[in-house]
Length: 152
Image (tube, rainbow, N blue to C red):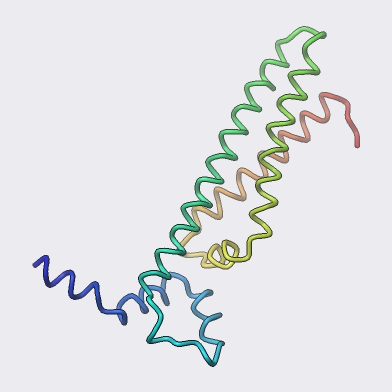
């Protein structure tokens, strides 16, 4: 059974179809190139590369969540703090929110991840998590600006 499984996995044609249905947007982009060597491409490597990019994107979302939570700790501390330390806590919270929003902007400029995320049915949960954390960070950042009475 194990030997048969290895033989099936070594067939490049199966990996090609796996790539085609998992990453249809990327597949379509490659199919438009007339000189692309379909048979010579290692589809296993292409799939692994894309999943590594997605794994990196997932860690970016995790990092954004962690920064949001650290900012929330400072925001909550500011609410219960005295007048002399309140502004410092809000500024600290704001710095965590802004750091995460900068990370989000870097993702937006990454074409490879954007193309993969456009495969809505396959990676819907990642795209949803990304959009959700971005909205939350913008909202929290706006609230910190209001508390600091920083209108610019």
